Image (cartoon, rainbow, N blue to C red):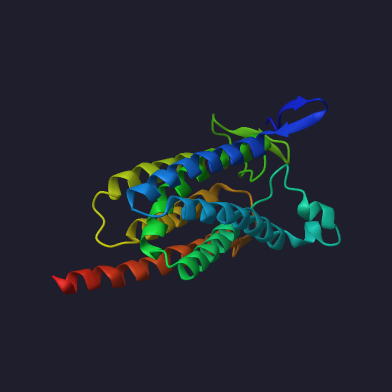
Length: 247
């Protein structure tokens, strides 16, 4: 693990923050490109991106704190301290989607175009950011004896590098989405498949993560991922049937 990347004048620069920032920066550049491709107002999309990032960080922190509330009860400073990690992806995603709906309603933006424009940036930015979790040592995996097992500063023994599993699988999703973007049947389909892809990746990866499980099988995140897969799937089926009925 390498939680502190370097120090300047006694100020520690955390690896986690560097990778999350890098993921956001790359995602923003790609979002601008995708917005132009779909004929969206780039300045308006940039404004959405700013508030979307704020919502993602706040929502992700809220999701994490709620999930591990006993660790933070009565310690308000710890809740605000995110320098060493502690962000839940699903919490950030939910709040960002809410901000997206606000922009769609407030500025009359095409929901389908905006969501599809965000699909590729979301996947690539997330894949990069997960390396911050790996170097920080958080979100550690279950004990293992595989040759690629790693140590975490928060747990004993060799552990599955679930952060890398998550990153590589999400990167594979990113390339799938590039291929898929050339053959979608309706607006918004790319984003729906992004959500379903995230759900599949996280559901699988969570089997290798050291966390409390319901009935010794599924954990809280996996239950949420079932919903994240089923809801977009239903919406996609309905839209595909509509497209088919018009032919």
